[in-house]
Length: 190
Ligand code: IMP
Image (tube, rainbow, N blue to C red; front, top):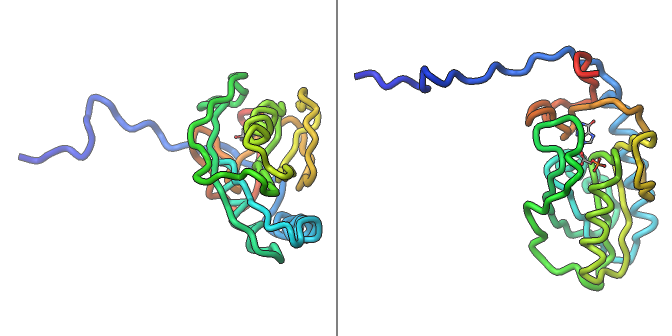
C-alpha cells in the first residue's frame, strides 16, 4: 500500500508569492549596521553588556550586529508575540520564551527588528526593568515613527521607514520571507 505523503483532504496551503519591492538593500543594511555597532561599542566599552535579542524577528539583525561589535558581549533571547499572523498588532503582548539567565545589575541592549506602535517595546522595557538591570538601551533596526503611539525612545535606530508592512532580514509575513537578505515592501498588502 502506498502511503500518501500528505492527507488529500487537507491540501497544503499555497506558498506565498507576493510582489515585493526592495526598500533597503543588502549593502545599505550592512553599512548602517556597521555604524550602529560602532556607536554601541563606544557607549558600552568596559560595561560587559548583555545583548537581548527579541525573537523571532531580530535574530538575523542580531547575528550581523554582534559580529561587528568591538567588545566582549553575552547574548540572551526573549520571545514575545503581538501580531500572530496579522499585519496589525493585536494590542496584547504575550511573553512566549523567557531569558535563560538573570540580568540583574547588567547593562542591557535590547535589540528589536522593528518598532511600530511601540507597544511591544513598552512591554519589554517594563519586563526587563523589573529584573533590576544596571541600564537598558534599545536598538531597533527599523522604526515607523508615524505609528509610534507610545512615543518610545530608541537609543539606536537603523532606519526610519514609512508606515508600510515590510518583510525580510528576519521580518516575516505569516512566517515567510525572514530569509530575504534585504528589507522589502509587499506590494499587494499596502
Ligand atoms: P509594535 O508592538 O506595534 O511596535 O510591533 C512590534 C512587532 O511587530 C515587531 O517586533 C514585529 O514583530 C512586528 N511588526 C511590526 N511591523 C512589522 C512589519 O512591517 N513587518 C513585520 N513585522 C512587523
